[in-house]
Picture 1 (cartoon, one colour):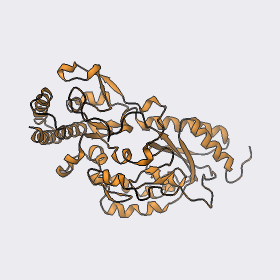
Picture 2 (cartoon, one colour):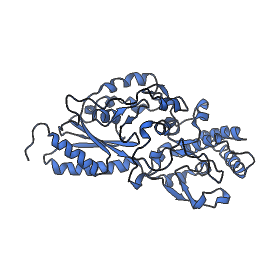
Picture 3 (cartoon, rainbow, N blue to C red):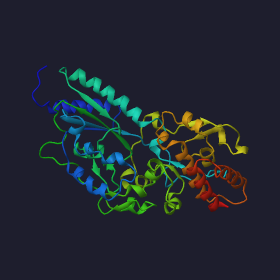
Picture 4 (cartoon, rainbow, N blue to C red):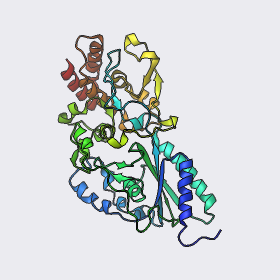
Length: 382
């Protein structure tokens, strides 16, 4: 098969078609290069907005060619993970059993998205090798390398960067993962030389900014990650600042609020993949002893008592192959304690007695992170 120096636009259309056949909702191609958004990263870092996420200061993030010197094109794919379950802004804080419930970000309910994305990207790479017989090199990333996938996706025509700093698409909102394939193939870009990325359709809307309970947005399009609930519950390994604990509410892993209130997510399509449905686990006891109704524990509105009482061994076993393992056991117990302190559980109820007993035990933990959080929670509900 004869090829020109730059692979044809029909090749790019073929790649997009094959990506969608693999279940990706969106796909685009962008030339590897520097983009204006990346130049502003240095100022953002100097303001300290990255907190403890030192990996964001990796200089390679400013140019894909520093990650893979011979790269010519980047294929960007988006995989929808939205499900039919209620949004965090609608779901009840407790069930009929009066047990306080937490919130886990919907992207973490099912299988680890890194694994799901990687499998699909690898299949796509195999298909590419059937289309392009000449030798070429690829490298795949699923939020695992020094790349700004959202910026690449914007310039591949997949959407615009919203006021909540997430990539937004007019048809599918923002509940999707991004995976990229760096390649030495020189592919025709999705956007032609006279085309620009999708225009910003946020307009005058401020719902995401105003809804953030911890005030994580320093200004529209600029996030101070140190105040973001996702950062506090996942990335921050030490003690959560006291002034941010009450605004965290019931969140124990991540946060969906700025997406849940976004008008572009009102009527988004739901995924057909069972991989992203909430996982459930057999309960160890009965409802009378405070275990899950129906004999199952679920990652959708999980019982806070279950999470806070989990042993390190149980954590490792249950969350193998789950994004939740990133917060580590002591981080999850810390978060569950704080959520219990915010639960407003009714004093004198059987649930209140159980929770106080649990928190008193955790307050004696040799793990300072856990004991301090448990003591704080006790001071709130006693």
